[in-house]
Amino acid sequence: MLVFTRPSGPIEAGFKNLAAQTTMGRYKRLREVTNIDESKYDKQTKDAASKELIAFKRFISALKPIMTNKKLSLQNMLDTKETCRTSYSILAQSLRRYEDQNMSTYLDF
Image (cartoon, rainbow, N blue to C red):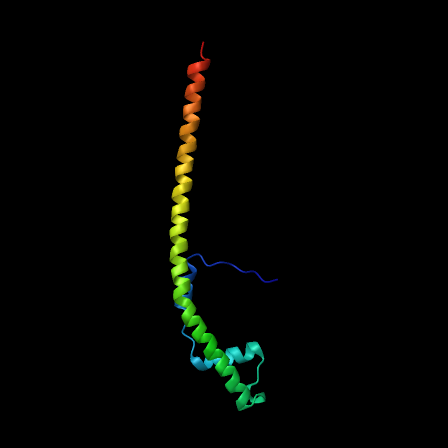
């Protein structure tokens, strides 16, 4: 039975304590995990895959500023929504107090 426990501190601090992995170490790990033997592929296939990766990298590079702007605008929207929700809550409380005051004023004989 495997038991997973969360560290007591922030997770980012735990990652910072890990030793940096070398490029060759990452390459070996990726090759083991994906079970890809690069000797099976010829140069033409590798070049085609490389071109696709370069195109994807350009796409991501173009998309990153757009996503950053979206993130900022969504944060502003969330802040506005929270302010609106707080205002509606205050309005509802005020209306309840107003109704309670009216009830006590007009129903007390």
